[in-house]
Length: 422
Image (tube, rainbow, N blue to C red; front, top):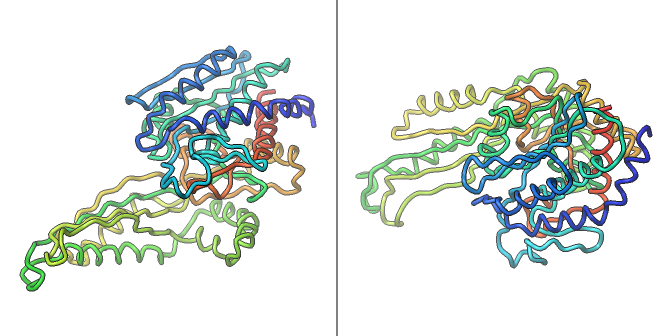
């Protein structure tokens, strides 16, 4: 390996990496409310003490973004992006440890955000610190952006930084979890988008004993939801390059299927059609009252190549044609996105992963979830991969990360930075 000594040297920072991850878990950056002030200033001070150029941006109180830059003359710019907010810890009785204390046990770190994605944040921080200390004659810059609200859409985080030209680079790594000894090594280059649909139904109250004197809003809502649910059965024409990415993803997902005892074709089905999940339903005040209002929130996952506006318009048309009156529709969109699997940066990342891990084949994959990569690709056209330590415990009780996965990823990040900037 060309940079073998530098890459292997980061092994000496294993203890620092573990402590840093535990420290980050200790900050209660649950989203909502996603007040990340304390953790953001902790990261800011970490980089200031090491001589980085550091800026903070706070578009809304508590939504603090930190941008740290290591510069070594003119050259290419490598961007790394990660979020410091976490989903709520939920019921404490489901946890075997305090979710906001990083607990090291059996080669793992437990705590809320361990996998998603404070381990990735710690890895990137240590990688950048390591590169600032060594005598490597590379030129260019590494910019690390730590953002506050990825779990609720990224409007005050990555989207804000990208729209204002703060997040810039010639290539980008989004450090969401993609690789572990459990999942295997993978580089995510495509992801589904989200059409968040809000549906309201208006009716007319009456006594439940004479329901024909009223209009049941819940009944209306159920009919509309059945129309939306039918979208799952729609055949989708995808661009050939997206089909290629899906095909390349299958060996990776087949391993996961077998690991969980699932049918091996379940993920091919997942990446062939939209999914529709009715996540929230509200309506009614009492069992003996015909409800005059009901609402639902629906998560529709779209494949790369699909146009969210066209899908929304089709739903609007179907609802209109149904003749159901008093229906309101609204939406929020997270665009699907993808990267050219033959692109130069994707090829470089795959080569680096293979060199560090010894893997004979590194899968490039599509992901079912949306990340902030959509802003970096979609608004700036920056070649972007998603790569970080992670596993199936994200968003669950007793979330954890394998320490060895963090160390391996720190070596991969280091090699990518050196190969890209030299």
